[in-house]
Length: 118
View 1 (tube, rainbow, N blue to C red):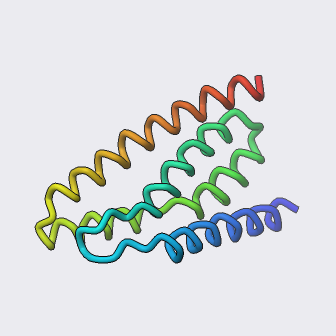
View 2: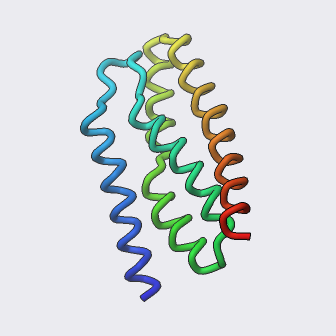
């Protein structure tokens, strides 16, 4: 059941990320990649909540769902494309939005997770 659950939630997380990228594409080297920003901030929030769950559930939902939903490689590629096209303002604003939004969302998720599951 553990492997099946892991595969199921990983497939769901990957599908949601794909759907977001498909329906909210960033067009052009300096365009703001809002889909990737949304899934990464949502993933950070959900991972914060997941941290309050018991061990095996943490692994399944944290690595499976949140890991498949979020994308470090996509962020790296998007930042690289913006830097190579010399879109420095877009690069900086995107990186700042990811860091500030991700850290804030993770903190909020941890707080909410502790309240719900304590």
